Length: 425
Image 1 (tube, rainbow, N blue to C red):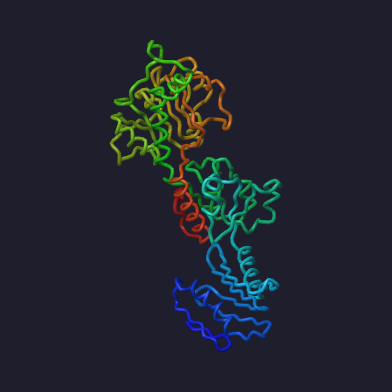
Image 2 (image 1 turned 135 degrees about the vertical axis):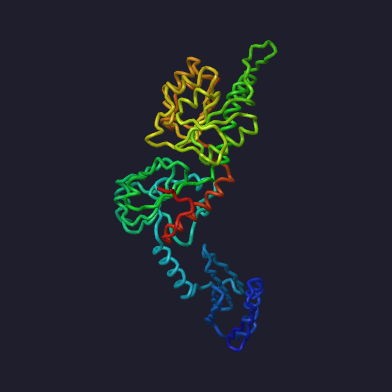
């Protein structure tokens, strides 16, 4: 393209690679072309590849400002100062552009954040930013949530919630325009699914983003507690040695009978890993899976009685609350191990603590607890328990994948399209 300023021609091929060179040459050309006696002039031109240039001159001061209309609305300023007394002046065009940008941001649909999601901490807020909506951060307000939402009743179109931010029927009633609830977790027990179903609100979870991470940790916890890795670490740090044969033996994983409660995405990944160790896999699930050859047990009690290891991978709901009770733990037996990477309340924690302390089961690997963040003090002194801070999902790779999924789900919700990981009722 060709732009003419007071008899001076400035050419620019429609390629962004020439832009920086063009900017510097423009300042130099205009400086030489303008009469030295002229005290002030304003030159403006529009570049028709989603940007514009404003060139201003005042008492030998030349300013060239460019603003790209990208997602972040970044600006590039190039200034050549010829006099210390001269001061650059922002043009009216720049002010108008800023005003338009501010107004467009205010008009964006809102996504409610009840609590700060972990992805903000590990990847930054920009990792789930979008040009199609803006976040309404309730956790930054000192007001009660219902009062805070008074001014946003009709602007909130979606909710992004963590595993510890309940989305109740009362909350949803305050937000009549909500189209979707998107969770950062696989489990959706924090969401009132009945109310969402009644209202026609779509719900999406983290899908299979975490499956490999959680499966890795489940197997890690199992090997740790069976081979007494953490207990051995504490033993050595106390300056002790096993030469006298006083350190208790662990047991091997190969050949063990493993029962998986919940053969979904995570359960399948656990099964694949343990098959490689030569374990025999059985499972209990809501329905038998015709696509797998593992032995299906219709009742958890039957599964426990036929297993050396019980791994909990199912979701928490009314049917699975305290699914693992005293009877199931007794069926697992004194040489049995249990691993929980599902939800804490799936196991009756009081009965679990009692069985561990009395030697009624061999050991436990726990990523979750019934009354988080509270953990039973009795577990702290037991060498046959390995604990993890409900962080099985947390890896940099998972957060990168999660960021893409969250933005995709929320943008689909705003556009009233099917969600990427939508739950099927």
